[in-house]
Length: 251
Image (tube, rainbow, N blue to C red; front, side):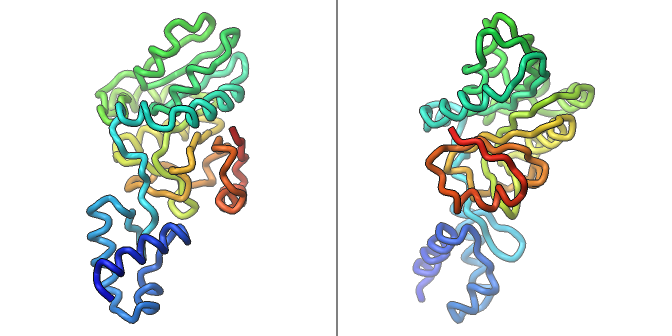
């Protein structure tokens, strides 16, 4: 089998099964495990999969820059944001993470909602600037341009002093094996810190993020209380998440 044919088959298996075990796959093809690992390295360097111990997972396609993500899948993100906004109750302190889907949560908060929103995203803060009854606390720090959020020591220190009722976390991938992941190590660290300070962690995920993985782990599935996703997602795809006691809310 040619290298190109093996690589095409690897991607086919990832789409079908959601994971690939290098040792098993090499036996099936009758080639060495080193050959398959080399194929995986090359595909990973092209952003076509995410290598993990013993094999590979599908790579998250949600890695475009912020401007591109703002115009991608707008209607689906708006539906998720509308449903997620209803989860916030009057008087709560809520942390809304950065990301174009979470902007839709802020955009759909009822105008009569009295709550405190904490965020390290200038985009979220601006969205809520004219909301009459929401107090906005903006966490400062060094701006990570890809996601337009504050990160670093100053952000971490401020976050360590708060406790929130809910955390709407932004992820680029959500996979049964790796949990919630993202593409930047500093951003992952900030997200983990907020999750540790929150009574509930809620993920909003469009279909392209489910079953995908990015390089940096945030939290395992057991730390996630609720998943808000698209109505069209099949029960088979959602089964690994419900088996981890995650409440599924469809938009």
